[in-house]
Image: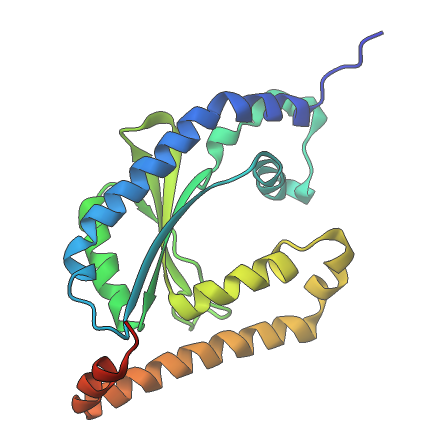
Length: 223
């Protein structure tokens, strides 16, 4: 007797049906973002950085993401038809990393003008009083009527730290679940992010107080 298909089976099938659209959206949004930011990237000092990258969420990550959004982080087997991966905003994503931090507002303004209908969904800080850790927007583009795209604008130092932190703590291997739940590690994560922000703010403060530093940094920066 053939076993009944699970919700996960159906969602995996949907994922691979959507995959061509997901790839088109990622490519389209990345191209739009790069083109929009050309006027900014052309004015960067040698010490400044602006990096644009895209990614397609893989199948199992998409399933896990949808599952985490459900009550109790589980699918209701009696409501199988309610679940669809098209409800996710980040199947196709683009990230913009900028250094120093004062470039973030400039990038954010340019991209909001380019994507005026996209919905803002900033990554919050640890407390309500904290400023967002990243700007984030999602919406539809010409590449697909089914799949939404997303782009993030984040400090380069924070973004590079996230590459490590997300795989070790935010979305860890099952063997690292205890690390992810550790209150001490959560506090250490906050301290790292606070320190990175303080580094960037002090760097910018020095530049504002002594503009000659800019020329000194530029003259001694490696090609």
